[in-house]
Image (cartoon, rainbow, N blue to C red; front, side, top):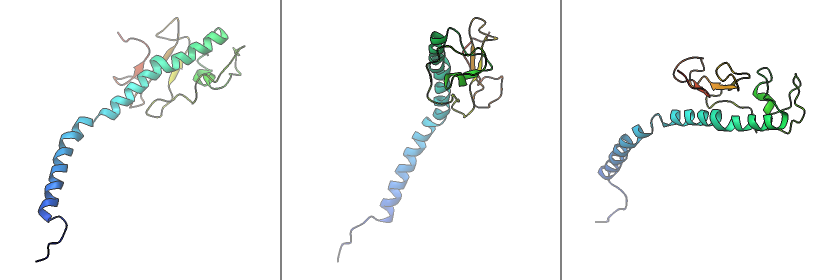
Length: 140
């Protein structure tokens, strides 16, 4: 009798069962990691990346952008007062949006940081208030 090469149906089903079992063990470990990564990225933007750009702007010009000028002042020189005398930007490469596609919010002077600025994201839901907001100030 000639022996043909290939796999039997039982061998194929066994391989499929092994892959399904491994997937059942591994997939739950990664569930929710994407959202955690987005929160970490937003926190890094709010605590390090954007503040560094704002500090460079302030170092060059002697003041931070106003609330009206917003974070766009880091991309292009503002035309509204106070016009920065020594703008040397752009201070960031692209428009600052959070990982959920919404713009970051900026206020100077800040309501929470009276001697500085407020920088925040409304988080995943995009609505102010709630536990998913990410801010540069401490909540009491």
